[in-house]
Length: 243
Image 1 (cartoon, rainbow, N blue to C red):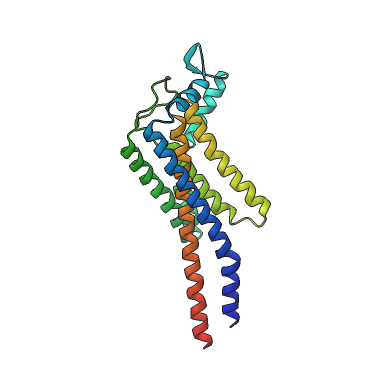
Image 2 (tube, helix red, strand yellow):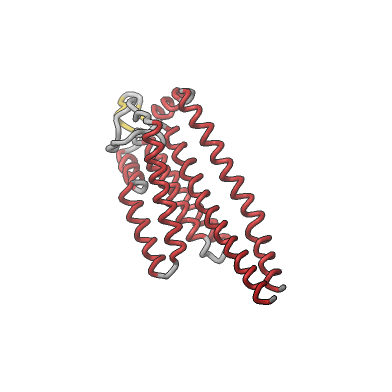
């Protein structure tokens, strides 16, 4: 009976309320993404996209982003943090670290989240096939479609997933808050850099953030469901032994 009590305590403390909150976040992200996609497809965001993009350029020379020369260089540095090479290297290195520590569940979670995010991003780009901005010269080389922003989406998936893995290992709420704040900041900076360099419409980036965050939350929900089922299974096994 003690094991049943411990299992119920675990479920009540870690599953019910937290899972409802996470589910609410996932539904909200999906709804916002669906609304944004509808607006983009209907062309309702065209004027806003153009205004924001022009706001980040010198009026007399659209090839020159606002700010000093070093700000543009910083933009290229930041945008690289959402590139395929950086995120792939980071995912492999961290995943192998977990595997060497015999923490195969965390490694698999990371690889599935990032790998699935890449597939979803590629599918969405091919499906919508939105042209890149031609309003201003591009500050970075691009070869794929524009919607959603792959850099923004993959930054959200990778950094938020890594943030969750790191935050769960922290003993204090203050440290967990700090870790997740850094993960969110990294995601935002990558997306902002894409608009600043003129390679994406702002709505491309917004869709990337929402889609990436939704997928990251969905993967996290999956791990919580697996943990819950394992806890229930252990509780049933314990009950059988006691009986």
